[in-house]
Length: 180
Image 1: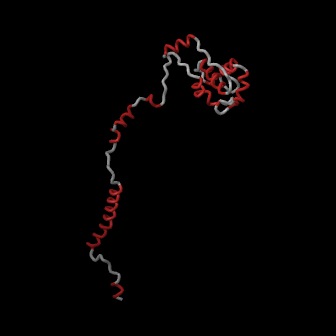
Image 2 (image 1 turned 90 degrees about the vertical axis):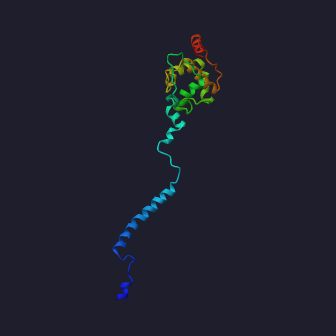
Image 3 (image 1 turned 60 degrees about the horizontal axis):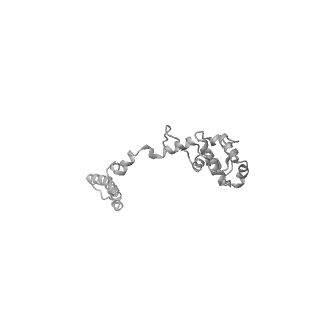
């Protein structure tokens, strides 16, 4: 039986060897993990916040708020009349691009035909005063009557009409000319 007992001997024979083995069991994996992390993240290290000191980052921080897509309008200045296409894109396209609530689609000659047959004055009057689901001036009361008429001409002409662009009255024309 003494031979079977000798087979189970360990390399640690003294308490000092046991302490060294336990400490090595903790320190060796920790050192390996630290070295592995250093190897993986061996990039050029930049101090925190140093990218904020570049000229581009500074310019981004101090740029005017107006650059964010806001358009400031001077209400005390003369009114700049918009083109029919601009008014169509801003107001009318919401319904007339899709045909919402029975509105004639832009460029659809079949849908615009009966309206064009009523004449320019009737179509513009309907746009200014509203008709069925369409509110007056397409829902934008800030539009001038000339701007609404220009939008109507733009849409009707795309549907096959031959309407002329409305004339701007002399007072509005002089105000527009002085603004330029």
